[in-house]
Image (cartoon, rainbow, N blue to C red; front, side):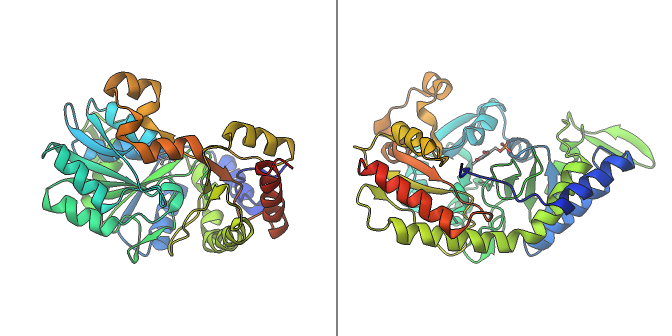
Length: 370
Ligand SMILES: Cc1ncc(COP(=O)(O)O)c(C=O)c1O
């Protein structure tokens, strides 16, 4: 079976974890600090990182630390993983959806401008998702938001290593949130992080991550109603080696994605993604023409030894959001189409060119009823 994703965990990574387990220090400690420092180096010293227990925890803390609360409205792309919006709902704020671009699957400055105009000054924050690692046009979106005093949070769950408008993600916005779930390019099992240029903001996130604790004059006090969103040391140890190898992993993904593009280019039943400079290629999603049955294609690929899956969700269609906001496909036609027709193909550094050839060949055969 050619799997959809497979983390790059090597013997040395496991050895590091075992050493931590043997040390007896299982909670957050020196390895988490090392991981945060390594992430800071990796992002070219944009600011500070705070490692947390998941990408969802990172988004939750970011919004909480920005003061998003009951009744606030947050603009969210309709095409994403539900966590992007769920965190807004969990702060008793309201989600306002925005459609996405058909070829990048991300927000554009025009879409944001139009959405802000239609919500008439009521938006307090907006979340930009770098979908599948694609570098969304963050600089122009931040320019628009800044003029209107709107916070910008980057959902960079899939975008560690993505360079957007000349900088690693997290440079232009208030903060960027990452996930280290095993479907992402670097994994800690569950895990995540917040990055911000603003170090006092990161300090606030650190406090919220750890029950609101601060130690002053050797005395512990609780300054906020915080949470426990800490990462454990053995999780951080798992990621240190992966992070060192990550630039090579991104390069390999680019080569393989280019190979998909050339092998699938002549297939009229498909629309292929754009590979913009700076894309970190967490996933490779193509669009099937609407006459092709996606689930049957996924099943047929599985029967031929290839794992594939749908991309992200159109949030307005999900039971919770449909019941709460009652939006229709006509409000978000592109997101609806991507939800119906998106197909993610295997892409990760351990794959070989021959695997990409196999996936492409089997997909073409299925589409052409061979
Ligand atoms: C765009 C996006 N945001 C947020 C998340 C949540 O990350 P986690 O699973 O680490 O909580 C994911 C995870 O798949 C994601 O794809």
